[in-house]
Image 1 (cartoon, rainbow, N blue to C red):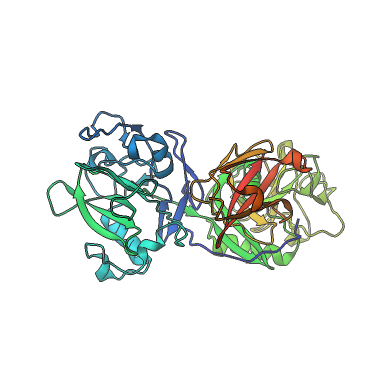
Image 2: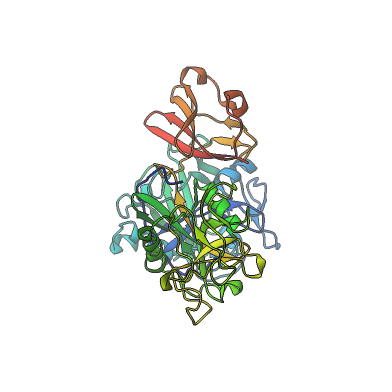
Length: 507
């Protein structure tokens, strides 16, 4: 699997690893199934999209949202599709769920809360705003912090200009509609009262200024809402031998972890040398700082583990590096260690680090209870409190249904950064090999498109000419001489001064 090398991009701070919100991953709101991307800014984990929860209330000019046990929202121009793109617009009391207090949950999902004015200040200062400017009001605060919060601003906050509901005036400033001023705006409520009665602090990011406006508005304005995670963990990226790895502190079964790795364009880690083993274990312990008691695996001696890509689920006793769970991989070991039938042997001198290796007597794998089909790295000796069968860092075979953190290794020469053009729609995605691309950039700006697989192999290239004067395009893999193969592909849309990339998945 290790035919490609890549460059380390980031190494992020890990906090509160027992939390279930993984910052940088997609979060699903269980109340309505909507998904939100997330981004880490300083030590705050923000939703990277505006909240869109509740039932649309048609705003004809005077009707307000009410305390009726139903979350209500305004959609720009009374169009639900605008909420789908930009999120809902909420009055302050509706956002607060008719409560008061700083940093309360309000209409955010469980595990999230509404930001206070102080939490916005904390984020602004992390972006480079001076303390003096951060506590000022008005639009002349800081330098370019507003630009940093916009799409392609580098923070991942991705503020879109969804406009507002303006009492006595109507909907205004949405970038899909002509603006009365020529500029476009997005406003975000905070939980903090202003200095005037029934006024509350907000933030404004717009196309007129590079800064972030801090001011107050009356409660019945309709503004956007962002939420901050109460607790979170962040993935940890590291590099060894020009290859990129990612430790994911999210508990999944081995098969679910392999599926997540595949979706991201990688596979559960394959360890082929002592040097790689040491680098991986050091990253677990000293980089990601995963606690050695974050979970307990009963069939693994009562200690914690982290999944790797080793498995014998296809054929008992035939251990493969099969981190994408396709049933194919390098056979590096057969049989069992001394704690099992004792017939284990390495294949073709392949590296292994089964429990007991340090003593010279390999004791694992042992297929305890006849249902241990996946490999994992131990975070302490086992059975718990001893080193009878293995020490920290050595591997054990455990039940595939255990829920553990896991390590992804990437098999591409480039780590793909998704940047989907604003407004583009790809559906269905995943699909069986037939996709429709809708809302392509205008023909004068569209230079061409390209589809590659995760290795970088080009599947399809289309130049400018065939794409002129069309806004929708259907792509059928079967008509391109390529049988639809399950996996991850990348659609690259080239326009002037930009190459936007998004994943497409064949299931």
